[in-house]
Every structure is written in C-alpha cells, then in structure tokens.
View 1 (cartoon, rainbow, N blue to C red):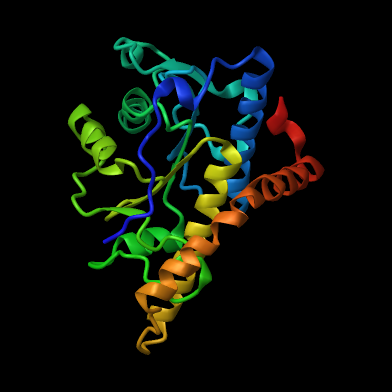
View 2 (cartoon, rainbow, N blue to C red):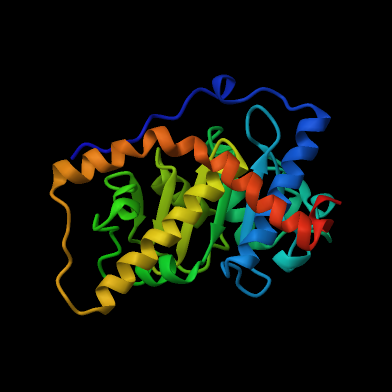
Length: 261
C-alpha cells in the first residue's frame, strides 16, 4: 500500500522563532478557529482543544484554558505552555488533563505539528464509532483522504495519563489527519488555516459517507487507481485553505470580532 505521507522534517526546517507580531496573529487565528468550530457545530460542552506551537522546537505552545467554552475564547485567553514543564499540571491554572496529555505530548515529540486541532464533530465521530472507520473513496471529498488518513483502532479511554499521550503521538506518526476510533478526529498542519481546512473537509467527507451508509444501498467505491488519482488531484487546491479561512474570519468580524481581543 502506497501511503501518501511525507516524513517529518527536522525541527530547524519546520519553523523559526516567531516574532511578537507573528505570535499575536497566531493567537487571533487560533481564537477564530474556536469560534468557527461553534458555528459549524463541532464544539462539545466546554471540552476539546486546539493548540499552536510558537517556538521553533514546537515545545512552547498556545492552548485553550480548562473548561472555557469555544464561543467565548479570545486571542488573549490562550495559555502559553511549555511541553517540557512538568509542573504545569500542579498549578492553579492547569489545563484540562486530556489536553495536556494529547497536545503536550504531540508538541513535545513532533516539531512538525505546528497546529493541532482535536474535536468530536458529529459525522466524523460517528464514522470513528463504526467497526470499520475507514474513509471509503466514494466522491472527491472522501477520496481526498485516500490512503493518507491515519486510523487509531486501540482507544484506551479518556486520555488522562502519559502513556495514552505517548501512544497517540506514536499512532499519529507521519499522518496529518487521524481518525481516532471510538473518540473523534485530530488534524495537524503548519498553519491554523490549513489545519482548519483539513478538519472542514474531513467532517464533510464523513458526512457524505455516513449519509451513503444510511441509504442502505451498496457503496460505489472508486477503483484504487481512480481514488489515488483523485487524491493526488487535491494537491494544487490545498492553498485554498487560506482564502477560505480569511473569508470565515470575515464572517466572525461582522458578527462578533471579540475573538481578536
């Protein structure tokens, strides 16, 4: 099986230290992602977490505060954490344990993971709950993830311990999108816009597939060569993530620009 994924780049090739202005823009974009997740109905009570690395080695990162609803998150609300700081969970303002376990471990182990979006969107989570959670290539969106979507089939419960964090970081491997069986999904990318776009299309693809399953009719799965060709055909369109995210932020600016504060 030819898996269309690239090996992680050395940390020094992934990113350099960000300027203060760049860190603030990253805060704004990450805050926008939280607000947009609410608009798309991808939020879940006051849980789930998005993060973004600010240091070249990826170990210093922004993360949402414990139990703050996505709809209220502002750029200034995001915590700045250090994945190597073992006192983090002993402080009064400690993050949610599962956030620290998943995001802290991945940022510590994978410098390429500049932005990590983890949530439980309805259709992708429904697909993750099937005995066969693979994304079958039945249209262009589902084929986008052909042979490039990681699948975790060994759910170990709520990720509150270090071992589960290490396991998940290992399962992520070189993938940029991970279907977490019995759990949800995670996307990683160099920018918030790209990670959000991956999450957007992953949920749309899962919706199409789940609706097709619900019809009760046999799936018209693409032949391997057509699925591979379709997946490869997505590459020139990956840059559309940025104008799409800019447009989505403009809708927030019209309704409630407080995410920028």
